[in-house]
Figure 1 (cartoon, rainbow, N blue to C red):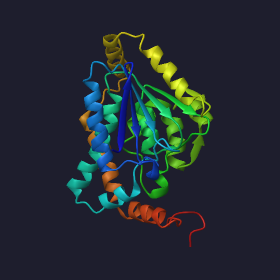
Figure 2 (figure 1 turned 90 degrees about the vertical axis):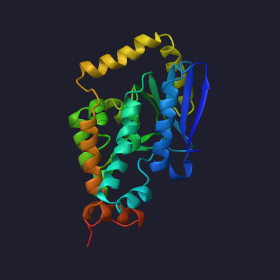
Figure 3 (figure 1 turned 60 degrees about the horizontal axis):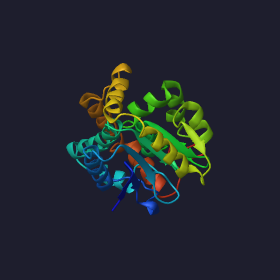
Length: 261
């Protein structure tokens, strides 16, 4: 299983379980996670959801081998594939119960997107974040509505355009995470937060999440999901995207990198 689920005391923990791939997601993991979220959303015994990663990383984003395969899809296959990721992010963002990200390590690209979709995020001091898509000739399209909502246009612009990484302290400063703690205390901090959430009324919390989206003018919609999916599908099948992914997999600089001959 690429996603492990455990429940105790009204708290469900979903653990991304591809540690050898740094929990990078592919089409199979996306389908699995969407199924898990749908099941837990309908389980009245589950009051709070936590999202964590097995091994050293939280989630390294999209599996580049998967994206390389997707670049060879025809247009409709490519768009459908990208829309599946947008749908997963939307399902997490719109999950009807409180969600807490337990960021134990690197959260890059789509991994940071998962963090931004959660209501609350707690990270270990050693966690790393970044949006490296431009360095592959791509853009963080599917995650962009959620990331911009979490950290604002200015901060998103800085890291989207540079593709650089940043640490947990910076993630806290810009609002991507709410709390930073030691690796040893991370699970305890997440547990404490979840126990606090259990004091809220389930119906009130569902309505509160709807209220926040409505007041912020951020109701999720098929039109936005489709637009972002089309964008990433077009870029990863394009010349620059193919070259960037190929360079990364070959451990060489992409054509546009400084110093590239």
